Length: 284
Image (tube, rainbow, N blue to C red; front, side):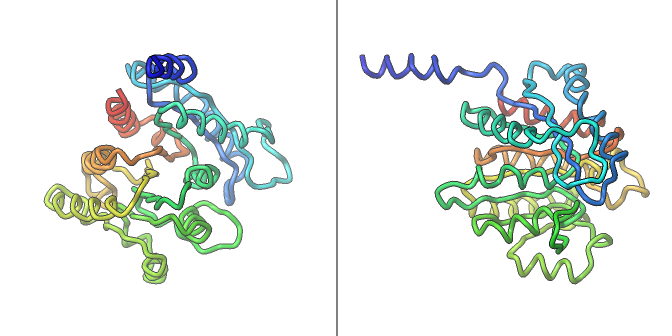
């Protein structure tokens, strides 16, 4: 009888979600973006869920809301500034995790993840951050800027470790790679992210995942190739990105995923559709 009561209580206070992929869109103001750039990204991200729903994906996800977040003081604040938005975003995201959903954050900068990391790290568990990106996100700076997310995450939280997937040699100098090595990072170069190297990619990723209790994914949409061409030879093949995503999801350690882009061609892209579909099907 007691076990029946517990089941009824769980259904009453923790209802089973019809769609377990919860979409939260976020727009942040962060250096060196100016107000015009932030407002452009804001208008695109505000309607991103509507666009995804129109692509026959509505059965895979649910809309939690759009959250414009002010992070850096501007002399002229954006028209959509709301000082309580950041708190609301964190509350909503944690609420989704509590009821067993997987949050998908679509945002204009990777640094959005820093807002929620303190809430995700519990009981001294090792948190693995998988950065699928041509950039390391390890710019050394005192103030938060675009491209510095992992620099701050690894220095602030001893529980965090990072694995970079698809680093472009042409965008990372030797000093940056040495710093990443000093911080205990692992990485795969963009040249290694191809079908011929799939076994090596799988093995290295599996080794990293085995040392983590939980995973967070951040995926840079501009780093993904829209098509195979010589002009995009340093960008990542979407099929390889999907392989990495599936392997991470199969570990059952992924807490949340983050897609990052600030331009229409990146947010409203085939790559975004495919990534959302993959996450949605996993959560069914």
